[in-house]
Amino acid sequence: MKKTNKLIKTAFVLFLTLFLSMTIIGTLDVSARGYTGTVTFQGEVTITPEIDGVPQTTIGLSGISVQLWKASIVFPFIGPFQKVKSTTTLGGDDLGEYSLSYYVQPGNLYELRVSRLAYNSQNRLVFPMNPIHTEDFTLNGKVALFMWANDIGESADDVINDYTDYLIEEEKFTNVLHRYEYLNWEGAIDNVDSLETFNSQVFIYILSHGEMIEPDNIWGFSFKEGDTLDSIAWHVRYGKVDPNTLEYVCIRSSALAEKIQCLESRNIFLAVEACYSGDFVWEFDEFYANDKVFVMSSTDDDPATLWIGENYEYCIYYPGPGDPPEENDPHGGVFSHYFFAGLALGKTDIQAFNYAVSMMPDYIEGGYNIGILSWEGLDEDQNPQYRDTVFNTWFDENYT
Image (tube, rainbow, N blue to C red; front, side, top):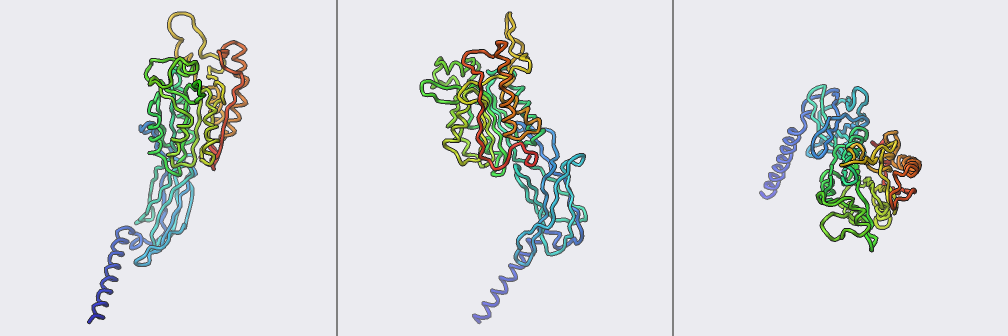
């Protein structure tokens, strides 16, 4: 009797296992029970860039890997997936479209996997019921953060918008965050953290006044609170503002380097356009040597030069009441101007850096010769810095 009961229990367990397996597989995989034959899997892979959460125009992505995987079903188990077909999305008029065909048959489970470096990959079980099966994908994962202070010129917004357009249109970034005069800079990094993953490409750009706070030679840059102060960096450098007051927020190079550690991505690009910004590069060299962060600064321990136009048309003094018109404000930094110009010429990270370094001296010297760039403390020699420990080359068309 005991042996009979044991056999009954064993049979019941086997029956229940088989029933549940068939129910689950039947729910998930229609193709395993139904359609047999050649199926064309097709669709489009796109991004819909967002600026501060506002969707922009959808863009198709070329060169995205699309793979079909299958796993054999042996009740009650599903075997390991194996790649059986692959293709890449197209360019030109068919930007973002893909198509691949495969003979599907009962007893298999299928999955489409879409991926490319710098984006978050997507894996999706597919259940073809017809000869044509369409699956569209939207990728994300390329995240940019811009933080800037407007007391370097009213046209700073225009510069940030130009750089944003470049990242979206040419580098196909999916999420861009703008943080103007943002006092909670740590919160801005947290915002990036909520959008990125290990696979993400993260670009952080800072445009502000740099400062060296005496007597401790503490390096950083600042965003003013409200409009109560002009040119904070100059005031701080000459000791006219107490660095412990709440009149501005100073971001130390050490604090920023430490905060960036919260990001999962191992492919981060940090660019600082500010006076004395070389310390941000040295900070990573000294304390975060193994981090996957490309750090770039517009200068070393000297002031940095503002971009005032190809023919020095910005910031020309106009006598009379009121300020010069907005179109005569500085347009960001000289280094950043030439760096992004280099990117527009198809150069990669270090190539664009070297291009900017090569273009700056003549421009700065020309400004000195006509007396526009001769303000106190500015050295004709401006020496940008960089440190590269990332695995992939930034701004490489094979990576972007």
